[in-house]
Structure formats: C-alpha cells, structure tokens
Length: 339
Image (cartoon, rainbow, N blue to C red; front, side):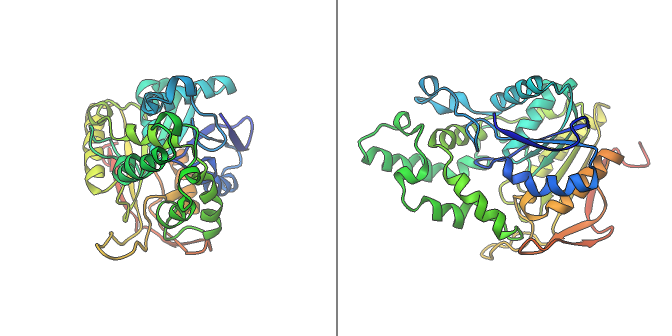
C-alpha cells in the first residue's frame, strides 16, 4: 500500500481513505490546511487496493471475478493491516465516499482501533440497489468497455483485469475529465492532476469495486456504532443524496438512543441540485471543493467534538473560501441540552 504523511511523527493519527478510483492525492489540499491548523497531528493518507500506487489484488485469484477481491471488508482489513505495520494503535478515520464506507466498516468491526470517524459524502449502503459506482458505471463498464474488450478477441473480465481504460477506449481520458473527475468549485489544477491517475486505474478495480458498492445495507449495523462521528454532506451531492442522509441519520439516532455514540451532521453549500441545470455548488467531492473549510471542521471536531457552525463556500479556481459564521446547517445528537 502506497501512502504519504504530513505533520508530527509522534502526533495523534488521522488516517485518510479516498473514494472510488481516486487516490491519496484527493486529500492533499485538506491535509495541507489541517497541518497549518494542527501541526501536532500525524496525517496519513493511503492508496487503497487497486488505486493510485498501491498494488492490485492477486490476478490469478481475482481476474475471473474481481468483485470477490474488492469491497468494504477488504478495504477495512487492509487499513487494519496498514495500521499494524506502522505501529498505529488507534486513529481518527477520515473517509470520502467509498472511503467513508470503509471507515464505517472499520469502526463497526474494530471499534477499539478507532478514536472517531469523519464521513464525507457518505451513505449507509443500499442493500443491492445501485450505490455510486453501479448506478454511474453499469452501462459503461459492463456493456461499453466489456464490448470493447471482447472486440479485441479477449475475455471479460479475465483479460481486462490488468488493462486500463485507454487500452480499450481512446476517448477514456476525455470522458474522465468531462464526466467523472468533476466538481464545480474545485481548483482546476487539482482536477487536471487527478485525471491521469484516475484514467490509469486498472479495469479490475473498476469492475470489482463497482460490483461491490451496492451490495450491502449497513443501516442496522450502524444502529450499534460506538465511536463519535462527524458527517459532511454537500447540497448538490446526487450520489449520496437526501434519502441516504435521512436513512443514515435515523440509524445514528438509534445508536444515540442506545447510548453508544454521538454524532454531528453538517451541510455544505446552500443550493440544492436543480434538474437540467449544471451543478454550481458543493457536490460529491468535498475534499476537492472546500478543502480549507473541511480542514477547519475536522480540527474543530477533534478539539471540541463538533465541527464549526460556519458555512464554508468554495471559490472557483482554488482561491480560498468564503465564510458565513453561524450559517451552516448542523444536526447534533445528543444536543447541547441533553449532553
């Protein structure tokens, strides 16, 4: 597993887990801001299996059915093994999208290794219904890319496992730039750096990860969550939408009622998505859109148990943030009067 770290080697550890087809680069901006705010922390970001510079699972075992070698149980086991290797006894987990599902899995199966979790653009899963990857990529991967592989006289998914999208689709890089590596308020330079990394992700990862993301509903399990949680959600996030947030909060409310956890949910952005209108506010990729605001909130969560009440609005082109003190939508359980 490839990784990089910033901050104090002896500090409290934050482990960052990226989203589908992303890499540790996704958290670079947030970590830089967080290091300025809390230089005493040890910030560690990893490339999860099959992503970035980390290795693919064993081709001989996985190529015929990549879905058997990806999924949240694998990501969680990898993270624990990684912590063991680095001698990290306990960490705060910061997970985005797919990485937030991995963070949930780690917190549910190894709560003693988790101080708290930050879940960015998250959901409780959908029990077999499309969750992020399948809904977006079902036709692209299982039809278009599969057809392109077979047109080369190869079998799918076996012979596709170690190929990358450009090997079978000359327009893959442009498609990534136009449709996948996008975020209205992100720094264009950051997106430009991410595009080639995403384009080079092996087809085995695309296939295995997307076939798994919709496979389980963690709602009932989250009712037993036992570590503090901070959930960050963008108003124009259609991948983990309002229904996902309602189900997640209902599960966490049950955990609060049982006395096992506390949580804070925070909304980023002000405008909901409008049908037929291009996104123009905070969407799915908060670490790209508002890294400085997210860093402020993570620091506050570590220090006080709650993010700031400020609404952070990203500026297009990476020019920093605008702040509206006290305007963010916050849901906190238990609330101040009952804590």
